[in-house]
Each structure stands twice: as structure tokens, then as C-alpha cells.
Amino acid sequence: MRKEITVHYNGNPCYEITLNETFDHLADDIFRAVGDTKTKKICIVSDSNVAKIYLNRVRAILEPQFCGFISFVFEAGEQSKNMDTVQKLYEQLIVNHFDRHDLLVALGGGVVGDLTGFGAATYLRGIDFIQIPTSLLAQVDSSIGGKTGVDFWQYKNMVGSFYQPRLVYMSTEVFHSLPDRQFAGGMAEEIKHGLIRDKAYYIWMRENRELILRKSPETLIDLLETGCNIKRVVVENDPKEKGERALLNFGHTIGHAIEKLSDFSLYHGECVSLGIVAASFLSMKKGNLTAEELHDIEDVLASYDLPVRTDGYDRNKILETSKSDKKMIGGKIKFTLLKNIGEAYSDLSLTDEDLLEAIEYVLCP
Ligand SMILES: NC(=O)c1ccc[n+]([C@@H]2O[C@H](COP(=O)([O-])OP(=O)(O)OC[C@H]3O[C@@H](n4cnc5c(N)ncnc54)[C@H](O)[C@@H]3O)[C@@H](O)[C@H]2O)c1
Ligand SMILES: [Zn+2]
Image (tube, rainbow, N blue to C red; front, side, top):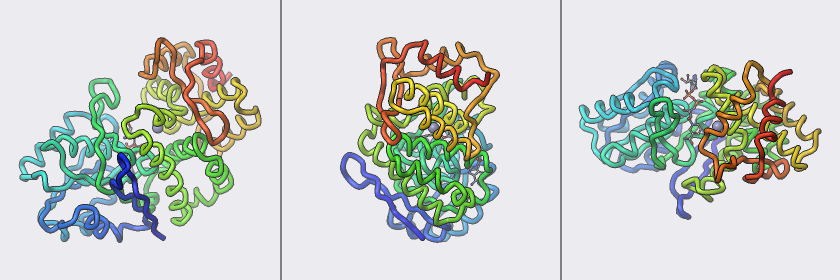
């Protein structure tokens, strides 16, 4: 089974996302996306974990198709997503005489994708790049929409650019090696997608948990197809994050605060799960969800091994950190809430007391 999704930018077709069970179509898809590969050099960027498992395979497929091949591998982890690593990448590209005609390929999770995209956006004022996302989070979230960037000092994603890939190639094969905890983190984003845009998808994930966790390629391609389409529609409507794209932040305001305070010992998706519980609680307080719906959301998250309660944090610190995020308008926090399951909106009416109550809800007694 194989599926294709076309992503538009400013109303015009911009790039394809292809959903595959293997890497078998990679060379053909790249050829379709960028044309005469035999006159181009290619640089595969990856991290130390993913390179160990997939670099040789991808190299064997792509090296014969290009006139030059190099790889650039950096230490896995968010701590590598910075300008030092980007500079080392530039250095490799310069030493190997890469010009504007050549191609970068991001083979890895969101860290590799964000960093490679930023390198591609800025090297020689922009060269083509392709995403081969290998984590569930990267497949349904970070590889789509053209947001690229790196962290600077302690500030996450402080330096970056909107820059679209030429192709996003996904293979469900990568889930054989992706750790379960990372897979669960990606499911938090998928559940978020269902909650903000598509009730039927949310219910499908609730009903098909076993099939999804069994990771059969057909089920995963169905999961990815709907999840990627939800992200696609939101970014097509709002490519530079001026409005609707903020809805993708559902669960992320309190989630990010917990992520920072946990010193990143909790994964992003785990914090998003806690943030979804808090935001759903607030949606219930507003009269938009019933208590049963709130509990159902918690049950679905928990069924994918995602946390729905945590402890060991100061509720005021979580509030303070949430407010120090950038989503403030006129002293009010901009918060994404649910109108109902499948529909989200931006709310500016929440008070500190409301937020503290929601934070309290996710902190264990
Ligand atoms: N650009 C965007 O729109 C956007 C959206 C969301 C998140 N992000 C960014 O994405 C990053 C998080 O992405 P992530 O969760 O993929 O993190 P990651 O890239 O660090 O990957 C998580 C871990 O899984 C490993 N891994 C990845 N694929 C694997 C596989 N198939 N088999 C075995 N191990 C594998 C990686 O080596 C890493 O250790 C953050 O930096 C975040 O800021 C960007
Ligand atoms: Zn997220």
C-alpha cells in the first residue's frame, strides 16, 4: 500500500508527502521531485541513533542516483539542535563544493528535520531539501508545514525560517526500531489532531488502539494519512502562523511549561498529553465538554501509555512558565480550547485562577 498527499503553498501545489511501507520508492520519488539527480550531489543529514540503523540502507538506494554523496551525522538529541551543529554542516557542504543545485536530505526525527531544513534554507540563500522523517512525531507534525530552525542559548526554536521541503518521504518500516515511548509521544500529537479537527479520527484511534500498537503497515498508513491531512489543511490555510495554525498549540501551553520544568526528562508528547488534559478540563469548565468527554479523552491518552497526571511540580511555577511563553495578548494568555470534540478555538478569557485550577487537576493529590 502507498498513498500520496499534495501540500499546497499560497494556493499552488508545493510538494508531495508519500506514505510507504518501505524505502523502495525513495529514488523514484526524489527523481520526480527534483529532476536530473545525476547532475546533483546529495548530503544525507542524520543523528547518531538513526544513522546506525538506516544510513547504509538509504545510502545504497541513493548513492548510485547522484554524482556525489556525503553524509553528516551528529550526536542524537535536542542538545545538538543548535548553531554549532549547523556550522559544522555548512563546513562539510563548503569543503565538498556543494552548490545551489545540490540537495540535502534529513533522515531522522524532528531534531534532524528542523536542523537540516534550517541549513537548507540558509546555505547559499537556500538549496533544496527532502525530509525522510523517522519518528512518529516528525511524520505527523514537524516534517509538514515548513517550519525549520534551531535552539539558541536556552531558547527553543529561537532562530529559524519558514522553508518548504521538495518531498516528504515516509516509510512505516521505521517504526520497527522507534522506541515505544517515542511512538506514544507521536500519538499525543495525533490525538490532538483528532480533538481539534476531526472527531471521527479521534474515535477511530480510540477504537483501533490494538491494531495501531501492533503497527501493521496498512493501519499505520491510514493513521498517517488522516493525521498528515489534518496538519496539511491547517498549514495550507495559515502558512506563516498568523491565525488558525495556533490551534495546533492545543495542549502545548501548559505542556511546554511542564516540559521545561521537567528539564526535558519528560518527552514532548508526554507533556502535550498532560497539557491536553488541562486544556480539556478548561473546555469542560467553559461548558463545551461534558465530564464524560473529559474522562474519555484521558482514557484514550492513557490507553496509548501517555501520562494524564503528574506530580512534583509547583502549580504557581507551571503558571508562571506558561505565561512566560510567547502566546500573550494584552496581558491575557492566548489559549486553545475545544468547542467540542473535533473543533478548537482561541480563547483570551481565562484568568490565572482558571489556569491554576486546570494545573491542579493534572497534579496528583
Ligand atoms: N518544525 C515543526 O513544525 C516542529 C513541530 C513539532 C516539533 N518540532 C521539533 O521536533 C523535535 C522533536 O522531534 P522528535 O520527537 O522526533 O525528536 P528527535 O529527533 O530527537 O527523535 C527522538 C529520538 O528518537 C530517535 N529516533 C528517531 N527515529 C528513530 C527510529 N526510527 N528508530 C530509532 N530511533 C529513532 C532519535 O535519534 C532521538 O533519540 C523538537 O526539536 C521540536 O522542537 C518541530
Ligand atoms: Zn507538539
